[in-house]
Image 1 (spheres, rainbow, N blue to C red):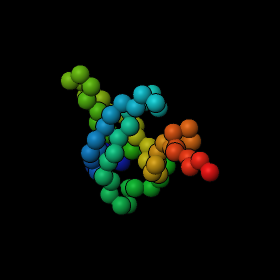
Image 2: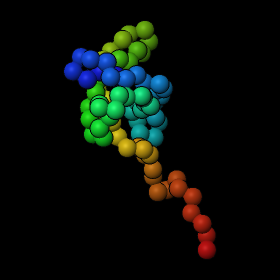
Image 3: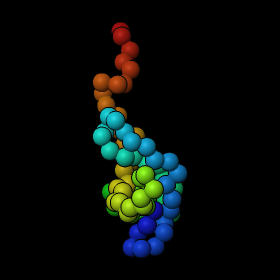
Image 4: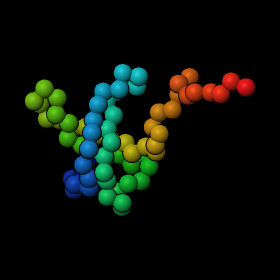
Length: 74
């Protein structure tokens, strides 16, 4: 994870989200760079090709659809 060309963290896991139709990642970020809404850069390797992509810091849970939340029947 980079901000202004300086490394400020690292992605610990990435995966394709079939529900969101995009890549998602969990990362550790330095406290001074971990502001919700902040856009950082990260390196992503796909089929041996390394690219720099943008990544946005969002609050957890980053996806919480009402249709997938269990409800109690009263």
